[in-house]
Length: 226
Ligand SMILES: *Cc1c(COP(=O)(O)O)cnc(C)c1O
Image (cartoon, rainbow, N blue to C red):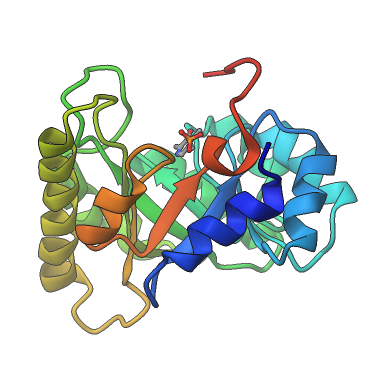
C-alpha cells in the first residue's frame, strides 16, 4: 500500500507552478496529518469547525488551515483566531459574522465566494446575481476585517469528464467577470479553488490555483460526516 508521503509526492510531481495543494484531512486522525506534515505538507483543509479547532491545537503552528465546508455562523468563532482561508462564503450574513469575529482578533481573514456550479441541487453556493448583490451592498463595502481573494466551487459528482470540465470552465469565467467588475486593482484577488481527488487534473487544466485533495492522499474516509 502506498504511504501518505508517496501519495503526496506523486500528486506534487504533477502540479504546475502556481497551483497549491490543500490536503483535505477531515475525519482523519492527527497522526495522519502529522505524517503529511513530515512529508512537507503545510496546507490542510477541514470542513468542521470543532474538528479543525482540536487539530489546530495539537499540530505545528506553521500549518495553514483552510476551511472548506459549509460554515454555520455560530461556529465561526472557533476558527477565526487562526484560519488562513475560508473557501465557503455563501451569504452576506456569513461574511458579516466572519468580519465580526476577525475584528475581535485584530485580523483580516481571507475568504472565497463559493459558487453553485454543479447540476446537483444539493450543493451550496451563490449564483452570479447573488454575488453581484453581495458585492454591491453597502454592508459589504463597510467590512474591514475580511478580504475576498477569489472563488470556490464543486463540480457534479460524476464520471462525465465533459460535464465536469464545463463546470470548472464556468467557475473560471465567473472569476474573470468578478475580477473585471470588482477586483481589477486588487492583485490579491487571484484564487480559484476547484478540483478534488477524482477531478483535480481537469480543474488544473481549467485554471485552478488551489486544489482540495483528500482521499487520494489519506485513503478513503471511514465515514462521511457530510
Ligand atoms: C471532502 C472534500 C474535498 C476532498 O474530497 P476527496 O474526494 O476526498 O478528495 C474537497 N472539497 C470539499 C469541499 C470537501 O468537502
